[in-house]
Length: 220
Image (cartoon, rainbow, N blue to C red; front, side, top):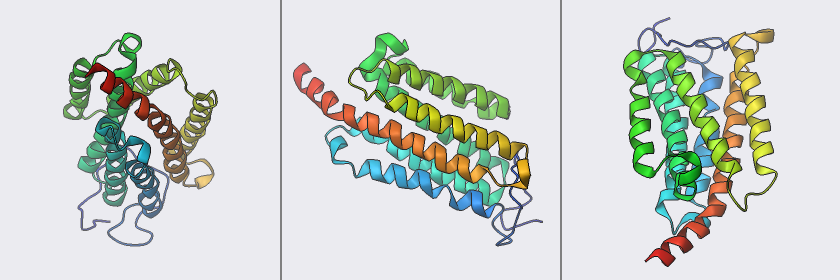
């Protein structure tokens, strides 16, 4: 079916039946479930712990962007929307790494500028149009995020196990959906569980915000 958005041409397919609720919504469930990312991002923007440090708002803004672009991708089924979705995911991981690098330059082996330019170079994967390139970059970013979290002092001991558990369950759901296991739309659960894992990461960053502000005051 050709919708208002044109012929679907995404490079990645999902198990959810297409155009079940509207001729202009490619995947209804996978579209609405992205509200989870938007809610987590908005909650972060309203968190009073971060209001003194603007850099800590960046992951929240990027996560809202993830929700919006992913919804657009699943609503249209178009390749250009897929690229926007994947780029916004890289923007989110990059923004988290930038925040972590302000505390852990010596651990992550990145300063703010090298991380920024490296992430921009990674985003050029869009020119190649290969989902495997995006996947490799995204996994590398996620591993760096875990490395940074593991080396943070004062982090609640349950934070990393909780993020790992949520991300593991989300990944299982993503793979189950790719295999169309039980002919069930598991990708909705990927959205919800991965959004929860992002919420835990954002909570950990929020706890760092007062420390970041205090360190900036001392250096002035």
